[in-house]
Amino acid sequence: MDRKEIENKVRNFLIEDLEVDEETIFPEARLKDDVGIDSLDFVDIVVIVEKNFGFKIKPEEMAGVVTLEDFYNYIENKVK
Image (cartoon, rainbow, N blue to C red; front, side):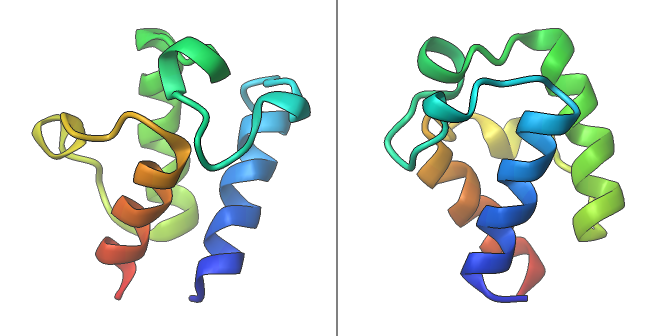
């Protein structure tokens, strides 16, 4: 899976499943402050990522994930 596919899948589930405004989705967007991801959304993201990308997110691995770019990188490293 290439980077563009990852970005498109993440974009789609943020918009469709979490009802995030499309205008807030850009690589430098901070997940909490700009995109509005809260702890309940994170639970949904764990399930969605497992379904779409085939791995489980470990909370301790997400500690350094602040922006969407960080999140894309995290997923890209896990699916290699």
